[in-house]
Image (cartoon, rainbow, N blue to C red; front, side, top):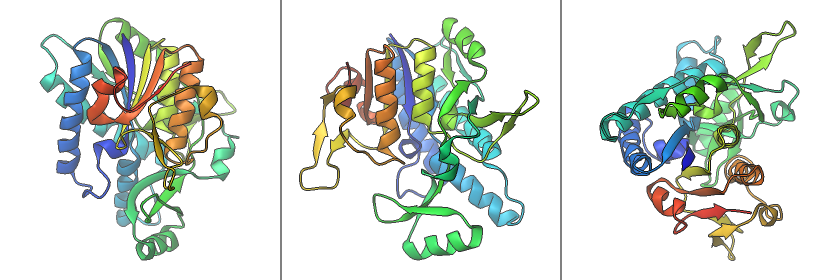
Length: 302
């Protein structure tokens, strides 16, 4: 079975943890064990989020040169390389001998007229208290939004992925049996110029949307979105909150989910299944095998 796995940035760097190298390395090592378990009897292709990490790099750059901020496409490329390296190294340490991994920087074309550029929804970076958030917003003129736990996070545009550039190289490696790590952070966002070239844009593409597109292009059987929540919740945060174990895309159409967090996962799951995928699963990283087997998380099927 061919499985595209989208690892959430918060699954690799837990909410509330210090944003340090050691915390990141420890969590990647844990993730690698879960991925290696699936790789024993399935072919896996790994994408990953970068929300906490790209936000941290933006802060580090801002502290060095506040008037010369690094663009998000470059910061996205840096995080894709960093996180991809960590995943590849830890995976190679636990995969059977003879299995090969390859990490690819992946550009993803977006529409320069996407309305997302006028409506930032993608949270990145750390969570601030209300007072800290006000200071950061005033200092850098960043858009901020309240998160589910009551803090404030920076939000940036999250346009829809239109085309995965370099897809031919990804397919060659996949067909050769290589465990490919790609489309990190949703891919590096680029737009086509008037002369036919490409240039980066200020955005962070949602990794679940890109993973769904990647899964469709690779004709994967399953799309797994592994994060820090155990399942999709109906009526989240209310007295009638309840876990959803199995659901169809049509049923999901009648429910509402947060645009910056669960919403893109629901959208990606529905798109993949409607395109012919057998199942899209959403749930906790440590339940990866159980989600695939239908014993945990949320399964989306036709």
